[in-house]
Length: 98
Picture 1 (cartoon, rainbow, N blue to C red):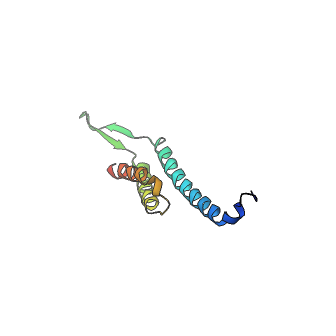
Picture 2 (cartoon, rainbow, N blue to C red; picture 1 turned 30 degrees about the vertical axis):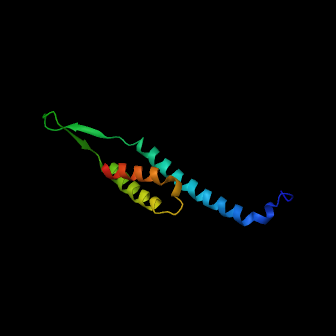
Picture 3 (cartoon, rainbow, N blue to C red; picture 1 turned 180 degrees about the vertical axis):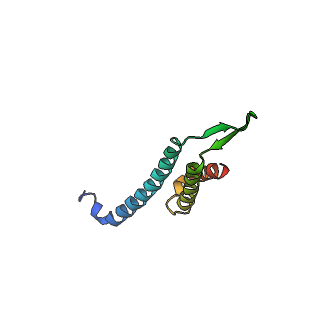
């Protein structure tokens, strides 16, 4: 490494590593949010024998939805989301349409 002069560019290597680490953390946050939706249950119940159904017990869903919209907006505003911006915006739009 000394022969190829890595010590001369250690600052650049460190900067690239820092940026990559931050990008990875943003990606992990999105993956974690996606995984949380797999465990939420949408329960429905008959409404007065009308062959119409309504959602029940939706408070955890609303809380998760609100939290994920806020997190996604913060992620979208990050300067480190540059290479993931299309996926983040798609996820945000999905959440907002719910």
